[in-house]
Image (cartoon, rainbow over all chains, first blue to last red; front, side):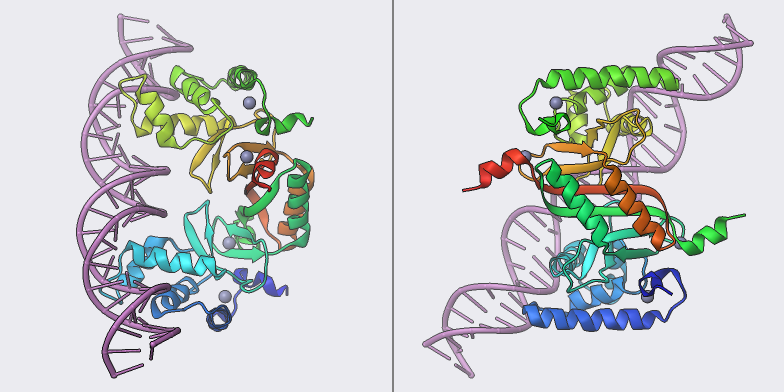
Length: 162
Length: 162
DNA sequence: GAATGTTTTGCAATACTATAACATTCCGCA
DNA sequence: TGCGGAATGTTATAGTATTGCAAAACATTC
Ligand SMILES: [Zn+2]
Ligand SMILES: [Zn+2]
Ligand SMILES: [Zn+2]
Ligand SMILES: [Zn+2]
């Protein structure tokens, strides 16, 4: 089994979430960034599953726990988490997902299942390289890459096949 | 000079726009799709430049010409144009750009200059292939690809350099 | 420990993007 | 001419994200 393909297969997801949180705490400590209760809780909510959540989904959950949650509360937390490489925004969905390569410098390639909504983040050197060289061939200097693939994950393919 | 790099260099843009419109008319004729005045005008507005426009930018321009323009007017036109492969939506900007490969089946890779905002659409076989194979390695069957690169175009690099 | 500057959070309002639902008009076709 | 589907008009609303300012929490220095 390919370990990175976990989202598409039954697995002990508590481990995913716990490791992500632990990793985040460690990264923030190193960077002297303050992983406050709100920020940590938002990250935890995101790590409930491998399915992306919208800001207002997060807000709804957060609001059920604390009185004072408003849009800026969650957007600020998300900004912080993105800045520190702990979550990714999925532009094609207006939603957010936990980064599975936090701490490693990488260009995430997101495989989004259109059926079960699970997202797998890959970091393929091949892809990164071919993108960079295609851009550079045009004299273009890349800064930020958005690469999102929608399709069917292995599990959902077999379910849909006749 | 690489012809596809036109957006980043001085060029006779009227030619771009005219060719795009002509091409669109021909494509719609072939497909028996009705390029109505509204739709054609929206396409023309998009082709004013190589800079992406938001739906409400288009709406503002459209509204100055016709009484009855409302959000659905422009969104419907944009839907039509997208369905027929004449424009692309840029997810990371919530904006729209004319397709420079209309009629050809392709996966557009968009190079977006963060300074001058000009967009170049590339169709690199290499990139497409490496993405597909990275996805398939995970057993993932791709349907739709969003690939948007933000960075500095050649012109803006030299302007920014000391 | 009090004073101070900085970061984070509270709060209200608003901006921006996109769609729903239903009525009306237009257009090709019998 | 009348029919039926496509396109547009119209109003309202849903969904996503930001601004601006005030209050509180926190770290730092004295
Ligand atoms: Zn998991
Ligand atoms: Zn799936
Ligand atoms: Zn041009
Ligand atoms: Zn530029």
